[in-house]
Image 1: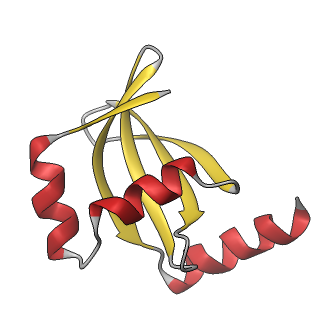
Image 2 (image 1 turned 135 degrees about the vertical axis):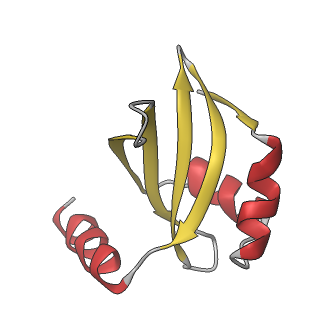
Amino acid sequence: MAYRWLEIAFRLIAARGIEPHEVIQVLNGPVRRPVLAYSPEGVRLLTIWGRTNAGRPLIVTVRLAGRDGTIVGAKDMTAAEKEVFEAWETSR
């Protein structure tokens, strides 16, 4: 999948203390969990749960368009999300 950035995504992730290279590390990481999601408006999204090279657990949100995706944001996992992700990591 090829990724592009939504212009506003840079400001959104910066406000959360996330660097663009961390987003790319999650998207290209060896262990990532794709989870289909929908926006409140019904737009199909893909959230990709993974870790940066330093081990930071992030969820990256991508808007799907055919075989490509547009990065629309990223966030740190909550404690509950991290627990679910770690259980998934262990079960793989």
